[in-house]
Image (tube, rainbow, N blue to C red; front, side, top):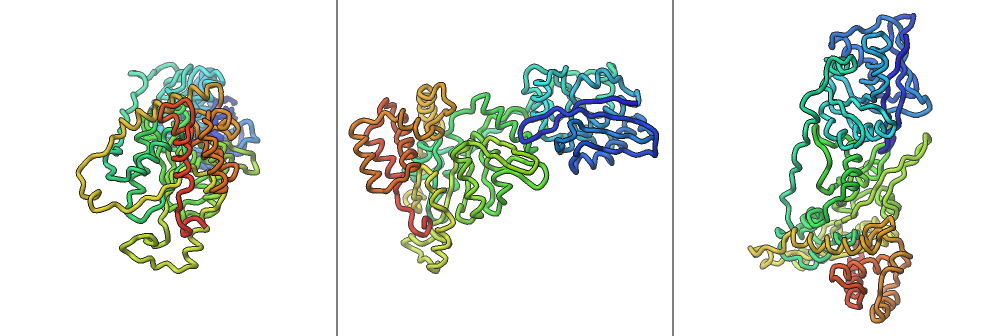
Length: 509
């Protein structure tokens, strides 16, 4: 007895259709899985039989062999439970084989036969639509994300017995796809920031051009508060950006049950003890997106950046340039998108008080040297804006005057981004921060005075080629914020102040 169903293996953020073949033959009762199943799929042998029996169906007391084809592709995840059960039930004649082969199925089974939320369903639905299946059967809790894919029927099922009834033609879901809960907007607003006018200006520039930012200041100066308000002034995500961000969160299993398209830009703030695989992506088993990919089209905030592992920080260099992370394993290379705005925060020294006029620094010279050397020159060369955050004065702390709100700043950011999109139309870049060096020079539109100021900055500060290009991009963003078609001298001068502002040898060796 033979039948098959169709599943989807999620490799990185893309789905690959897998044929689940079941053969029920002579031999001692057992379930054998072949075709490079991962540990979670191997565990399905202990989940599928109780789920079938608790659903009022019969498990064959014979030798059952299930092959996952193609056999040379590693399969991971618990979403293969339902395809295995459907293939075995079709092979034993308990459901018709023909409709079982026309639908892709995915979902983890509980021992009682219920379908529980399963990661990666959005990638499953996308691959199923591309393959031309009639529809995709998914757990009810994942229906909202599967429905984001056009051109395919989504069948939300609460349990295995309902899936069987659907394939038999005796049940159909009623009420359509459950609607996703409305997004909960954060309460953070830029108006809550007291003082720190130069820091607010740096945030606006970073948001307008997609520039990376390093803030250096003593504990309690407001670095974290500022970083958490950067997403509130970023422009709204385009539908394509929202779908890509949702796909990454779906693969990582971070979407809440019933949640659909992400509408808020991601903000990720990993702890400084994060491993390189946790930050960049990878893992010993299934390759998963790291924090840089979960921050795609959003903000990655590295607080106490000097405390992060050196190898993890150095791994940021290529993604900051390319907007993607490629994880290479013996089985092949997996690519994850990673277009994020980096915001890093650091104390001026290990104790944090090397430049505090009221508290003396107690750090030994060797500790200061080691602390500063944790940020390499090549990594710093990829940061566009360097900003010193001073301690708030008594007047600023006690002031009740509210600053400019996020909505007003976001409006200026949107206008600046619109100018960039029009200028960059036809290229892969959507903001000044994403442009290549040659493209940035071609589109800079420098006035004669601006060219002289730029040349003086190169001589005075010894800029590298990459540093020169990034200074040019920031100056172009300042021109966009000012509504200027040309990059003037004052734009270059302001960009230089953010590029060359001293941060102390205790941070930059």
